Image 1 (cartoon, rainbow over the protein chains, first blue to last red):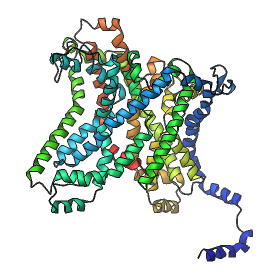
Image 2 (cartoon, each protein chain N blue to C red; image 1 turned 60 degrees about the vertical axis):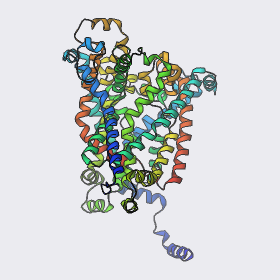
Image 3 (tube, each protein chain N blue to C red; image 1 turned 135 degrees about the horizontal axis):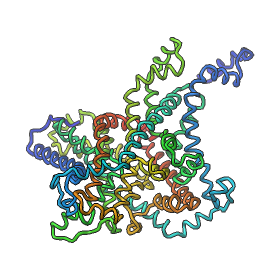
Amino acid sequence: MAELDRTAEAEPATYTINQPTRMERIIDHLKADWQIYLLLAPTVIWMLLFLYKPMYGLQIAFKDYSVFRGIAASPWVGFEHFETLFTNDQFIRAIRNTVTISALGLFFGFPVPILLALMFNEVLSQTYKKVTQTIVYLPHFISSVIIAGIVITAFSPSAGIVNSLLNWLGLDSIYFLTRPEWFRPIFIGTGIWQEAGFSSIVYLAAISGVSPTLYESAVVDGASRWQMMWKITLPSILPTIIIMLIIRIGNILEVSFEMIILLYQPATYETADVVNTFIYRQGLQGGQYDLAAAAGLFNAVVAFILVMSANSISKRFSRTSLW
Amino acid sequence: MATNMNLYSRGDKIFVIINMILIGMFAISALYPFIYITSLSLSSGFEARAGNVILTPVSFTLEAYSRVLAEPMFWISYGNTFFYTIFGTIASLLFIIPGAYALSRKRLFGRRFWNLMVAFTMWFNAGLIPFFLNMRDLGLLDSYFGIIIGFAVNGFNLILLRNFFEAIPESFEEAAKMDGANEFQILWKVFVPLSKPAIATVSLFCVVSRWNGFFWAMVLLQDEDKIPLQVYLRHVILELSDDEEFASSLLDSAYSFETVSAAIIVCSIIPILIIYPFLQRYFTQGILLGGVKE
């Protein structure tokens, strides 16, 4: 069959004289369809100017950058900044904190939205379901400054509700936000409080795709709702759970550092300082742009490798890729 | 989905009731911090400092609000946030709608390349420092325009809208072409009206991220007259709490530092609460539309 096709294609070769060349075809296409390129142009120019041009600027990670010389004219120093970073205790600590905070967040935070989705699915009253869903999605839309403000107020040593409760129980007040051992529980707890409800949407969507016949036959077999939840619903959404888990592991270097900047203080750097807050302090506050850019480049390269691996692994689990 | 087909056994009834109680508790814990902050903002400074506010306002007063509303910086930053939100969202749509349309057309030459160019920005980011230096080199520090243009395009929103445009049958486009419409007319008169839910979703994504954004505004803006509400709020909560002079200026008044910051927090949540019904409706759709798929 393929053989035949090829001869069929070769046959009209005699007409090539009249056929347009590749160049002419492109010109014809541009004449007819130039308008789509005009529509695309602003977005492409924007990306070049605001996302790709900074990638060119990343070379300062290998340079002794001076504001006066500019990016191109600053002298090369090779891997000097990386050597400085990897002998810097603060940077090593920042990497360790990033991974620890992410891993703890994953361990405690990952199951919550799954559990919530399973529970929402068992609510019989549609009104009750709607009202509770509306409430638990809300914190997702509130800015990190406000969330941090609420946390700071609630945990404040004098007026905060948490210490009022401790006092009421006969315990002493704790100045939570200055204590390194309390930073992670507060940060991770806040993250779960803010995002668990909203993250359950993905699982609820997966649950709504489960075939009703499975439940019907289970009912015939006399299964209880509890059994159906664990033996039908949960296994049915397992592929979604695995994909979400892979994405989260791929993004392990991504900690919501905006929230950390708002909540941490020198007293808690020990457990709170992550790579991006380190970059923020060294670069944007301290003016060591080249060193901070090197830290950022290291972070971005490792994150890129992790995300690409996560993407290719999750492709194996499902036909649809993440992108 | 498990419907109410199987509620015969006692075990099931108990399970459903316990489940409802647990969900209710979760919802209350999601809501409680907002109730606490609102009550705090409506209590007297004395009671707030003493830690007596738990659920409802104690010795109700609006003093904290009158203090906040009398502060010029509050109004300036509130106005700036509205400005950034409205014009930032318009700017985003002006880039994203045409861009997503072009990327969704099969006849676009080098389509794979252009799409990869978008996707790559979602996998690899130059980072804080190069972005900041680039903004500085472009002369966009301390500029309204810089905040609006510098964050206009977002790969996720672009892909979300592109996926939606791709799903519109080609026959619509062909019919419009037969009538002699050019690309701009096809986009504006055929695709945009057909994509209202997707465009609403993207607009809401933009509105929320603009309203809530604080980090880059804090880094890029030095001039106090240009800062948005979130940066002002951070200044009040983080910096003024350590400022003894400010704290003692509040000591004898009917409000306290806690009630004043609570009042600003409430004021800045209100607009989000007003658009929340739309948010909830469209975000759920948007998450499912744009999350997966090439």
